Length: 143
Image (cartoon, rainbow, N blue to C red):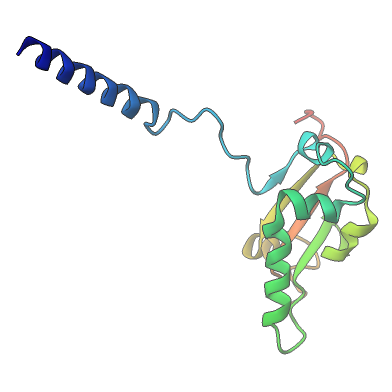
């Protein structure tokens, strides 16, 4: 009888330990921010010839948004994903093929409403699927 009680206590303790280890807030490896690519992440992509390849490997959703947007447009007014360097318009997402990874400090993803409301050209350009904003160097605070 005493052995049975000890076994039940051991099982109960094991369940508590397993449950505690899997509890929310006990995340040991958080997912990276899907709207940001840091310099460290960009430079970690081995063999990438250009920024398009970096985005394709690390944030493929940014490219998929562009592909879906272009396919959905029947009037030719959908511009897909636009690329900016800070607030200067560079072009469509394909311009990333012309940019080298070591030229960039950080990249941000803006969804369609945010891009349309905040970026020059995107405000008046028609339907925009989103925007990638490239920061070539750290801001004044180094952040």
